[in-house]
Image 1 (cartoon, rainbow, N blue to C red):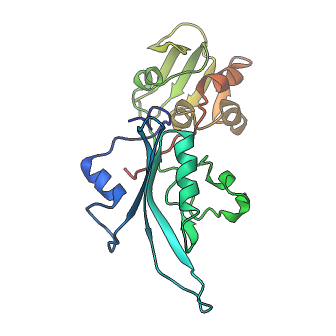
Image 2 (image 1 turned 120 degrees about the vertical axis):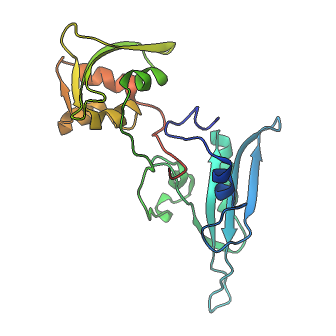
Length: 238
């Protein structure tokens, strides 16, 4: 819940999901006893943990070539995240660390003395979003600035289509259907997901033709309103 408060896209975990993430039960692969590392703040509150396994491989020159594979790493503060990766990258006899699924903007490569030492093996954000209820989605998130926009949503299936007025501020947001006045932006429902989740730039979507700017400057206003400090990411497959 604390992670979901700082990063969009994080879903609730069932007890089975926690068992899979921590390696304590419901194993899909051959099971190996995992190791655990927990980070606590100075006051003793848990702010992060990692679950990982390690193999036992040695080269012909009697040098270790072991790999530590992270199955789960959850950190709700930057200090916890840095400390856990520092710990994992300093394990004795471990030559390679496999990070497991990480967010698209994960800071891990930049934590290394040479960021080029990290290689991306798989690229996936673990999310698929199809907005059905525009009002609930836009009222349910937070906003960094005060702004009002009228958005025309096109939906061939009819679920989310219509014109909506969004009045948002750091204190909250109101979103209602409206028929008054011209829209500031128009977009297909497929473009609403990454925009509403803060994953994509409204200016970039306009350049791609996925957002139509009907009022001059509306894309830049939407850019400031919708973007989030962290890109959305789901640690779990759902």
